[in-house]
Image (cartoon, rainbow, N blue to C red):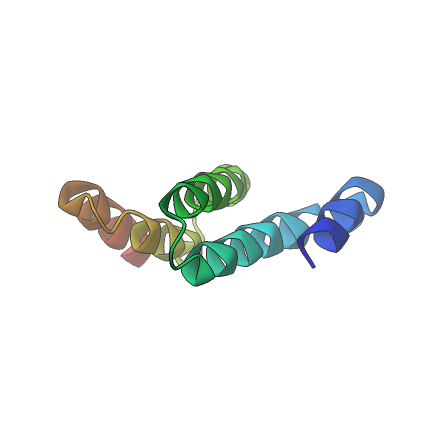
Length: 89
């Protein structure tokens, strides 16, 4: 599914914002299912952050994206607070 979304992102630019958020979602889901592989979780967390940051740069008033970033920052309470607060604005 991830490679299909990446292909859509590259070939159908009219829905670029949608594809970027979908790529963030899919990589976040992949991070969640990486149970025993800590390195795999870190890699997919970084990929997910990348896509959500790309999306939030394009749509800075969409709180949902900051909520997703807060979920990914679970080991950093200050960063979580920042993203959760930003998601409410």
